[in-house]
Each structure stands twice: as C-alpha cells, then as structure tokens.
Picture 1: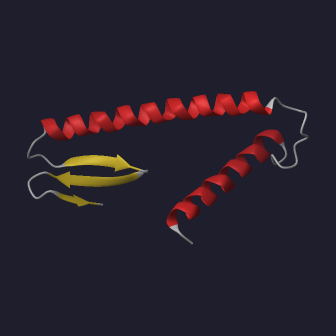
Picture 2: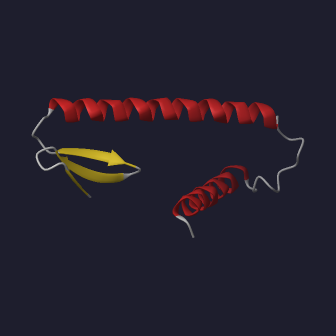
Length: 94
C-alpha cells in the first residue's frame, strides 16, 4: 500500500475507535438526524485550521533556531519523528 494511503487508513481506524469509545457507535451507525452534520463539519475544519497554524508556528520557530545556532547540530521533530540536523555537514540523521 502506498504510504499516504496507509497513513490515512491508520488515522481513519484510530478516529473510528475513538468515536466508538466516546459515542458507543461508529459514525456509520449513527442516526442521520441526531446531529447538525454541517455545523460539526465547520467546527472540525476550524479546529484543523488552528492545528495547522500552530504547526506552522512550530516549524517557523524551528527554522529560527537552526539559523541562530549556526554550526551547532539541532534536533527537529517532524511527523512525530526525531531528526538531528548538522549544519557543518548539512546532514540530517534520524
């Protein structure tokens, strides 16, 4: 399976399990008229936008740190993975 599709499927499975734990049923089993689906979608999109802005700020701060620590290896976290950037060799190691 391609990596992007695999990651989406993992998240989908996690979200479904979270929904079942929280609401006692999957979204598919939920009665259609129990919620305002449009409003819930807008709320989720607003949350997603806020998460993305927060991540952009984190990445911008990481870039500032790298630029100010010239010559000093720097730890960077991307997608939950830890990398070390060495500006002397321009290597990135996991």
